Length: 610
Image (cartoon, rainbow, N blue to C red; front, side):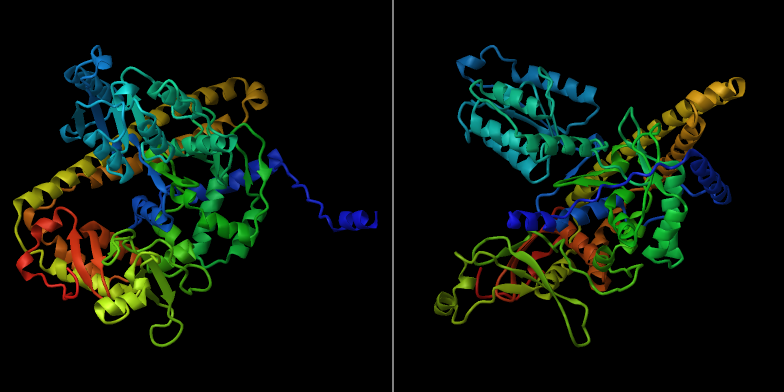
């Protein structure tokens, strides 16, 4: 009994969070003060020009953790059409390949997606047994490597009639490698029930189920994919009940924008910012007609808010991330450049000075040339690693290297065998300088003039420009439609308030402010979309400008202190490379740079292996 009493005394009672409603009078007073600040600064929704893009920061977050998948908007997905006709008797009545092609192309047109001729795969093989279809296997590899994002087929049985390949397809859907799956004869829904039915269609003996935890996780990922609210409210935004998208929440958004200005441009601390937000009655609610609740900000909460990538438009949950600015007309609170300055780790990685106190270098996690440095002795991918230099003139910088993790099978980890074969132990890692310098030498030899290389580059660039234009046009159209609708609604409520002031105050209070806020957001998004379309009118590079690209890459590699910029250049030109003992033996370049190399001038200075 004494033990039980002692145990009861040691148990901590959890303090229940007290929810404090914001009185309407106080909210209206704060709104008026913010409205005055908006009048003083009418461009408050117009964020500063950012040299960094959301795409660049998205790549940064992807490289911080293996297995993270970026969800692309429809316009940026690369779709593949898979057509199959078997000679088996069971397939005698199935549509012919030409019929399948016509109907799948009609489906693609209805969906508003373009499919390249080279991405239409026709195969005449049975799908009863796994591993027998070479073109199908190549297509699956394309989804694994990110070459493809969307898949169109005439019906599920064209993709698989066996459980091994059916399971592989469903796994790629789970991992968001296949981000969109469409059939001419069947409507697939990406949820547990939809995947179960798909599995049954692949093979009638298959029964597919997801655990409750997986149900929740997949449902959340689906919301992330569409930029929808997933149960976590974001300060400064509320949720539109019709679309479940995040909308800037009037004066609360303005207060947080002012907090960003205080930190970046006025040198205020997080503690001072927290005090300002509390005095200004920062509040939050989920939907526009919900009551506001006061938010008690602290130094720590302000820091976490500035660290959240949501505020520049990157929505993430677990292994899934989406660019909200691509998905819909999301209005960010900060630019990518501002986000970098607000975060110690990102500022260090991008070679910028952190806006807060303490500019010590932070831990680098994203990885340079991740997955592209191959061990010359065991053919496994080497792991990026780094060590901070503690003393000397380079104190605070990082010693970068790649380490072979294959302890069981690589001769690097067997000194006795290495001495027998090579006369010396082999180093288990290779320094960054010994990897980057050979790449620079390779780029110096990209001197050949190649019409094929130029055409490949232009074709690739034209596809990207077309995708970006399609996204910008969609966002412009959505913003204009929103502006028209909310102008109309605002005028209606204005008339109603004038004619029936008591009824308006009782049943529709706040509607004018709500629609005015949406009008402001739409106008800001129209400006952004028009600016993006103007930028995309820039002429494509000439042949001479293309040939000088490698010089610009060399200049960047030699001068940049921004490791993310270095990584972007290296990934643009390097397909992969093989690293030996303090030397690189082979470098493979991506297209079209491999077409520009004068091989007669290449010497990597490695002799002990070929």
